[in-house]
Image (cartoon, rainbow, N blue to C red; front, side):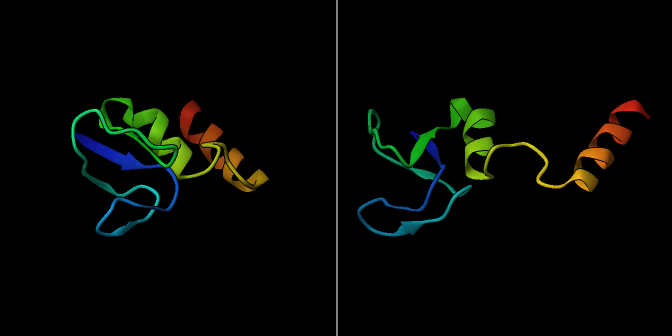
Length: 67
């Protein structure tokens, strides 16, 4: 199954970084990756909170949404 790393983790052969997509045996579970079917939630975890980290970033995001 295709998964995405939400944190740094070891898949048995390689250390995977947050946001990296890779294959795992079907039914595999881990606290550091999620099935790609849950990609939006997993990508937000990999990138942190998914929220802007500065006031400037928030203003830019809101400005783009209003445009």
